[in-house]
Structure formats: structure tokens, C-alpha cells
Length: 140
Length: 408
Image (cartoon, rainbow over all chains, first blue to last red; front, top):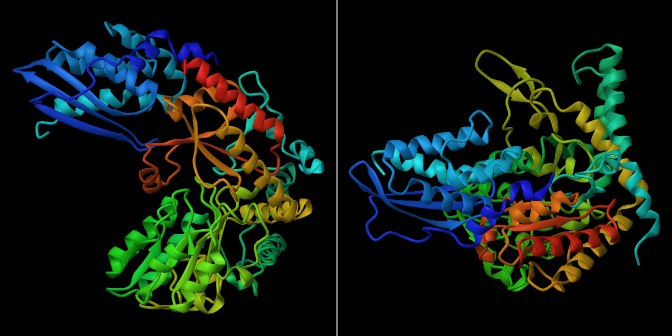
């Protein structure tokens, strides 16, 4: 295995300079998720303007893959409709399991190397699972 | 000095010759599970190719052979840990099942509201959750022995936690994260002074040092075969004979009864009372082969070798800038947990793997200990009899590579 296949420059950049890290003043939805295999945790805060994700922040602790993936996700969904954001999360998860070609995934495409490592796929999809939970769970 | 004759042991373990990602495999995850020597693999193959049958039931030749091999394995384990009789050895799936058996079969029966179960924050979840749950079922309370700043149990701290209400004390012999070696004999004395029963999680000690239960002071002792060169799925609960007699079975079914009618059943004698269903016969045979292998090397030699590696690795890692090492400096067992500044343990382990170095990263099934350390997770290197100085150098090199890769 070549390490650079997993840790693409974009990933290291998002890990060291995370985008949208922090908290919103008035989040419409907040979802926290734990990865029980490693104890990593991510909280995603969304501000919804009607059907639109008008703002988003993430917080938590985890490996470079989970943190970079969360950072990339926040960039990708900001300004999108809830429906578009859910489609993106679904696309990304299928992309990592190899059943889908990348479709407007932007920086997230850099995470493709992770698909060779089932244990790390959980890290890469943690924020996406949180997003799905936030946007499909009416109670949260 | 390093025992030179031990260095040759790598050749007994066929998997250690397998290259990983183009590098020599440096296996530093033995606290999770150890690799298996050819003699253990052969023993399982021989059982299945020559002797396989169910035990304690049929009267044909294979059944007699299988039963003899199974009971001989029990004798081997009994002698290995100094049990007074083989009936004190209960075969289980592993340490976790052994500890759950004590919680269900003993604690549930004898604990009452207001009683206290004393544990420590360094426990593996398998020696914590069974007691949390037993406390919930019985109305007993959990009390913690607080750790010293470097992660040890001092006698003063044990004394402060063990009191008149203590009915059970459950501690690990050796921490699977901190490498701490706990003063079990002294804790036993404190427990017995108040008529409490001492349960010892020996998963990380029985593989590494001579154990004599008559000296140790424990009342129950749990360990796993797969952490001592044996197969997975076989473990042991040793208990003092009268305590096992008083304990209730927790798995009901075949071979654990003497008489059954439509409404009732009575239990078989020890140890069958606790071994309902067909046991892991080949696993027991493999475990016996592992014990013979370890005894051939010598448990004292294994102890001095793996502790030397643990202490050497502790010092080596502590000297690397940007590396935090956890647990006491001396004595330190064969487990060394560490973190590389600003690099998550998962990423550390991934770089290590690309260099053929296998370590564990995560919370090591000890989340309360992670909370005590104030970290989410750690990396962990752990050693066994087949490791050597070169492996420590490979570990140190891998840390330097990790720092370089993540620009730390």
C-alpha cells in the first residue's frame, strides 16, 4: 500500500486547516455521532432556511480521515437543499464502497483511497451519517 | 541482558515470515491476540484429523480419545496455574465470558442492596460492565480505587476503597493499556480482611509470568487462550473450589445436569455444571499445546524477556520529542501505550502498517481509563516472547516516519 493513496494532499490540508469547524449560534439541528470502534466523535450543527442548508459547523475529535471528511462535507453541503445534501451523502458512501462513480463530490473525491480499508471507511463516513441523521430525523 | 536463545523463537511462528506491505512483519499487537506457534496449529489439525468426536457422551473409540485429550488439557491448565484440583478449571470462550460467569453465577446470588463492588478505573470493559450490570441487578454499589498520577494502584488507595460494605473486589492483574502490574496479593489481603471475594482479570498476566493461584490470593481468576499462543474461543475461569460449588450455572443445556424431569433439573458436579453445550474441544487441546510450548521456553524467562522489552520500549519512546508515553516507568509490563503529538492514533497505526509494523489504536476497551488519561484514544505497542530489540527499533523508526509524514 502506498500511504499517499490514502492521505492525499487535500486530506492533509483539510485536516490541518479544517473548514467550518466550531459552533453555530442558533443551529436548527444538532446531531452527535460516535464511532464505537475508536471512540471518535463528531457533532454536526445545521442552520436550515426552509429547505436550504444555509450554514453548517462541525466539532469533535477524530483521525485525519474523519476530520478531513467532515470539513469537506461542510463545504460541499453549504447552500444546498436538504434533498441535495442527502443525495450527496448517499453518493459519497456509495463511492467509498466502490458502487458509484464520483458525481460532483468535489474535494471528497480525494477520500477514495480509504475504500481499500473497511475499518477506515467508518471514519470517512461518520460525518455523512450524522448529516443523514440530522436531515431525515424530524425530532432532532 | 536480552536472553539470546529467545530471539530464535520467531521461526516457531510461521505467520511472522509473511511480509506485510513489502516489509518484514513487526507484530506488536500481542496484547490483542498473540500469534500461534506451529505446534499449536499442528495440535488442532491433529485433533480434527485423528481424534474428533464429542466429549463426555459417547462410548466409541474417538469419543474416548477426544474426552481424554479434553480432560488432559484441563489437567495441563490446572497444573500451569497451580490449581489444587482440575475441577477448579472451567473452560469458557475467554476472559470476558469467565468474568460474566462470576458476575451472573456468584455476584447475582450473593450481593444485596448496600453491598459494594470495588473496581479500578483501569479495567478493561470486560472487567467493568459485568460489575456495573450486577450492581444494577442486585442493588449493590460500584466503588473505585483511585489511581496514582502514573496509573498505579497504591495500597493507600485500595485501603480507602475497600471497606466494611465491600463484598467483591475486581481488578486486573496487569493493565492492558498502562502496563501497570497491580499488587494483587496485597489487594487480596485487604479484601479478605473484610470477607470480600477477589476477582482477578489475568488476561494480560497469565501469558507473561508464572502464576500460582495458591500464592496470588485471588478467589477467581480469568484468562484467555488466544493471548498466550493458544487458539481463539477458549478461555479459563479458575475459582476456589467451595466458591465454584456455591455459584449457580449460567448456561443451561446439555451435559451440565445430573437429572431432568418435566419440571425440574439438578446440576452436574464441577466443572461440567458451568460448561453447558458442546465445549471448544479442539480449542482446549490447542491451549494445552500452547501451555506446553510456553513451559518449554520457561515462564520466568518469558517474564524477564517481555518486561525488559516493555521497559526498554517505554524509555525509547519517552526519549522521542513529541511522543507521550502512558503508565508507570518501572515496573512496566509488555504493553506500552503512547500518542504522537497532533497525530491521531488511527493515523499513526496506518503509517506503521505501511511499514509492516502492526500496533493497536483506539480506546483498548477501556473508555473510563481514556477519560482518566484525558485522551480519546492512544496507540499501543505490545510485546511477546517472539519480539526482540530490532522490533523496538522498528517501532521507534515508525514513529519518526509518522512525524515526518504528518509534518510534526
